[in-house]
Image 1 (cartoon, rainbow, N blue to C red):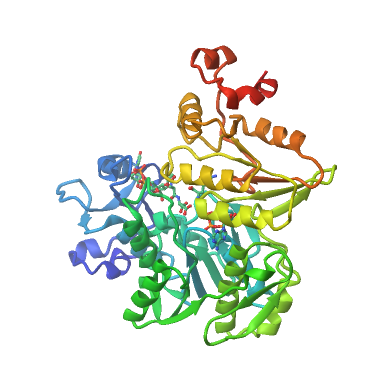
Image 2 (cartoon, rainbow, N blue to C red):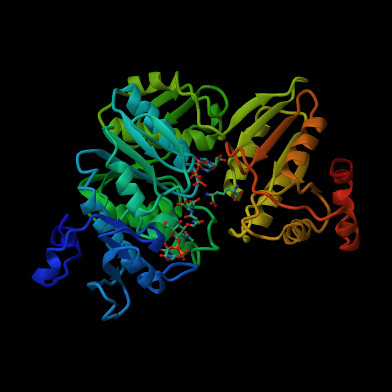
Length: 481
Ligand SMILES: CC(=O)N[C@H]1[C@@H](OP(=O)(O)OP(=O)(O)OC[C@H]2O[C@@H](n3ccc(=O)[nH]c3=O)[C@H](O)[C@@H]2O)O[C@H](CO)[C@@H](O)[C@@H]1O[C@H](C)C(=O)N[C@@H](C)C(=O)N[C@H](CCC(=O)O)C(=O)O
Ligand SMILES: Nc1ncnc2c1ncn2[C@@H]1O[C@H](COP(=O)(O)OP(=O)(O)OP(=O)(O)O)[C@@H](O)[C@H]1O
Ligand SMILES: N[C@H](CCC[C@H](N)C(=O)O)C(=O)O
């Protein structure tokens, strides 16, 4: 493709000679550059792509796009205001606007994106609309599933993959990181859905306000005919409705679920346009899942799918891997595996668990390393308020040293109210052994993820020396040795 065509949406003038350069590909990582590629230099969180320009040129870059004011780099250089945005726009043109004829649905919010996306895919496919799915668990394109590396992939990969989709609709989760990093730049949505906003990712975003603004920015990508479907009964939801209206885009407000049917057949009351009560047989229990179903339901109704067909489709909905999945212990105790990793999600899951009237609730969970630490004590408090036994364990450490994580867990539990078993397998084993008929064991944080990043536990004598073997560690010894 000629550079002239490629850079049109950037609105930048270049010489005729440069315009005629033939481009064979794009890369934003110097190691991935090949002959006749454009290299887009991005100033990132850890590295600065501008420092790799010469590597990129050695690998074959014939044009470089970047933010810095550079000259004489050896190949034509195009300076832009925002390299990440430029990457999205270039990728979209290079892959020939792969989504222009598709029904594009983007879902954002702290919790519920994956669940809502699975529900919507199921409803749409039951109505004969094939869907590609991009999200935290996997990408599914033309029915082929691949494990995800990110909730929202980078702009280049997104466009590359979308160009391979023969499906009629694309349903994608759009994370706040994805929005802040312009990973969806160049895409346009027919529907943008907002689930909720809770304390999360404040390791990355400065505060709730900037976290909200990142989420809000998804709605800037609505087509002029696009529709926002917003869970509106919160301050953030209300504010978002006002914002979208100010953009002159249609808003469907979703609220009003019926909390009396949380674990039986659920009912949901939709927006003002459809003030009807629908009853769905949702195998995913909990008020939060009624909310997710209501968002999926409202979007589908707006796509002209008959409410009765939607109700019927839920009869065959098999749920979402790792989200409120129930299993039974041979002795009759029940297990719930879930992906809850915020205080609000804990409230939903544990309140739902309590509705089963178990003898005891035992909760196993940890905290991913190098992520929002401010949310942790609230999560422990909610767990302690709702459970008989809380077992704190490791989630993925993400580079945090084991001893530091042990220290962090112990300091979060100064009164030794929790049992601390760092090795997650042993923590689950402990809960398994503890479980008796009518108990409910809730394991949260990793959901369907069937791996645990490798870590080396300190030896028992190290723990003694470091004085970590306080009361909460007592139970661990028998499993640790
Ligand atoms: C903090 C963060 O989000 N980082 C993401 C970001 O990396 P970055 O741009 O900051 O990269 P960097 O390492 O600083 O490098 C800067 C630039 O130098 C380039 N470079 C670097 C080295 C080199 O030799 N040559 C070279 O060209 C890099 O390719 C890059 O363009 O862009 C990369 C490409 O898209 C992502 O892989 C990377 O995700 C990291 C691994 C990550 O962990 N992200 C998480 C936090 C994330 O995005 N999570 C959300 C889900 C959140 C939710 O739960 O809602 C997600 O959407 O997955
Ligand atoms: N509407 C909701 N409100 C509050 N909590 C929810 C809601 N939906 C799901 N949850 C909780 O959040 C967890 C994650 O749900 P889900 O995977 O659907 O969200 P997500 O937004 O995709 O999260 P992530 O981006 O971290 O993968 C669930 O396992 C459940 O505990
Ligand atoms: N098990 C993890 C889930 C992380 C969710 C993911 N969306 C992220 O933060 O990258 C936790 O308890 O924090």
